Length: 188
Picture (cartoon, rainbow, N blue to C red):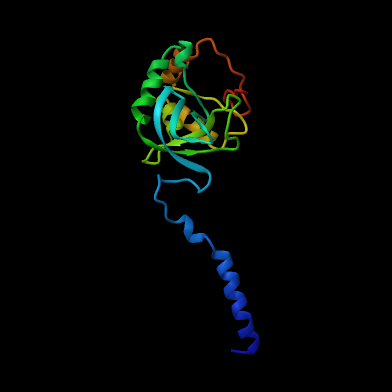
């Protein structure tokens, strides 16, 4: 090798090491599948007050109440029709289980609840499951819209007669403004 190439070799090695630094750290995870380090938390669901809200341990930044992003299920405390069914469905699938919470642009709502997408150990998103089962409807609260397309697709996957039945049974008197995507937009 020429003296110039010998002097350049350590610089090239250093540059290569710098570019590759940390690449391997994301390849192995001992937690639940998916997610990026620093943007997720693994928790255990210990209570399910209704279909779109859970209480978790350990707390996230001092709060144990987590509101699922992008979905609106009937509220148990307000006596809405089929609220008990949505809450029971969520409780059967979440209570006592470890879940991975994925956060979006805003981590809290105006009520102080943590906002998240909840993933089961098999990697499925529970928010999406609620929609596929017809137990919730898509409700967006910008800027938390990372998975809006996915959630809309899940809601669209419910067969038309069943979707109409679900909408009528849960929100018969609710008329939400429709956003540019054709999805009701709820501004919290």
